[in-house]
Image (cartoon, rainbow, N blue to C red; front, side):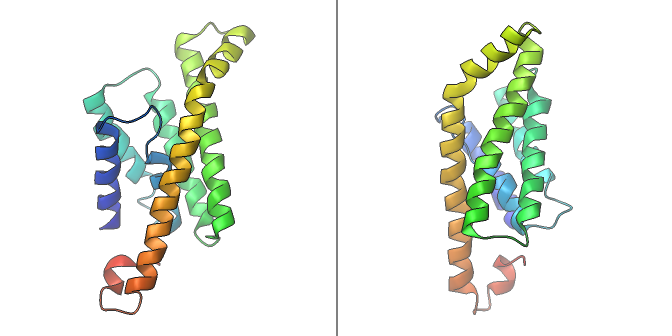
Length: 167
């Protein structure tokens, strides 16, 4: 149930107008890895990205983008037994850097001269987008992890516990 809610939320957030790269996909991938069954972890961010990219439009770097979110889901899986506020914060920061490095490498491969100058130019031009990625990751990770932990405390002793809790 939670996986479907995350997919719909991520899909809708990509479609509504937003600041570039201020989206919840990395936070959803982390959250999925940290809380959901490991068999579905890669599919949650992939479902969001494939469905929304079919509407928004495909581009030469989709496999780098999609792949980075799958890897971020694996970081979340590492956190499954290590869910502390510090680890969530560090994983969120790491996710932003991972996305930045992988996707901009793809941009360089697709659209820039394959030289050192082309590579450095690609990464330098992407720095303004990194800020939004980092802020979006931090904001949405706080919302997802924070609201889930709060909900766990509130419904933890009620009959709705089985519906909400996955661990």
